[in-house]
Length: 187
Image (cartoon, rainbow, N blue to C red; front, side, top):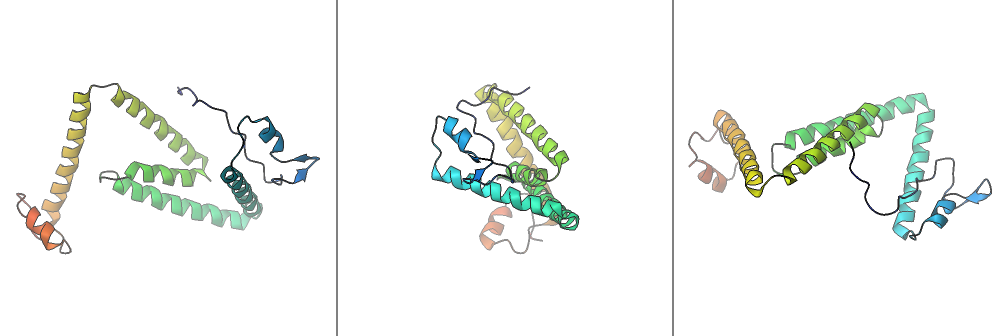
């Protein structure tokens, strides 16, 4: 179940690696027909982005043609994407962009692995459902959910610091304030 498409014209797909951007291919200019039909003129930035995407796609096709280089490339993409996803998952309970980093890692993995792309799309759908659900609730309910989440994060942080103690690298100003919290001692 998808929502309505955003308003505005749909941009044409970038040229394939076999097409040269701005050069005649089979008697026509690649991307020119779609651009001529478009009601909105493209900016110089959009042209640069299209050329960059076409160049990167062509380079990827060269790597894909060599089986050994393709395996190495896929292994490198898998390793980088996995590290980004794991870092993002570690950041989820902390204030900050944890889920954004997870989705970025899934996008990296999804560039080579269709299963990661499916997981990313599933996560995006669930995120949109959650946002829609939250926006339909009253302000009191949203405030209670926010307070409950903040309490849960604080409880986990307190539990960890009570178990491990305050780190030795903690600045004295922070240590002095945190020692007032019951159960926390310098580690």
